[in-house]
Image (cartoon, rainbow, N blue to C red):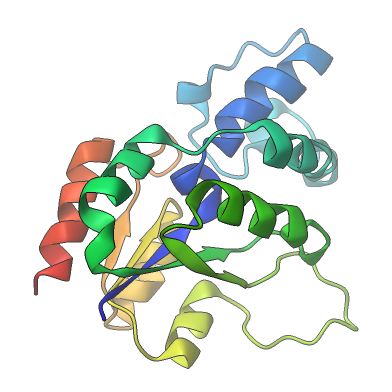
Length: 193
């Protein structure tokens, strides 16, 4: 069965937008950046803070988001209309300490369709086994899937250079010219090949 690999944060959900409005801006009233102005991800340079401060704030927000955040409704609608014909895998690059709440969020909101959860953790200790360093490494190991959907331009580019099919999910930091609906249409077009 054809398989779609979905990035979680900022594809299946609106994590960055929620974090900016619910966590960062309330704690930093001087922040004048709007979500559409986050032209880099991670955005710590745009925010004028260290990577450590940015990640501390984002990581503190993730468990709250996983309890309260809704999935992206356009994806839910797409899964309801088109998703039955394919397998779906959630693939995240979250830190390991935060993947349990993410997996629970996936199953609670998208478990009718997404039944496999995988992680290629970021910011691990030296003691943590490194099975895969990147999502493309994971996809090569997996060996069979049809399309990767991700908001990270580098990940999508690496997948394409490796001869894999990938769709760039539009976000301000990747400068995609597509709308969400156009990206979803590209997934279907690639699934039909």
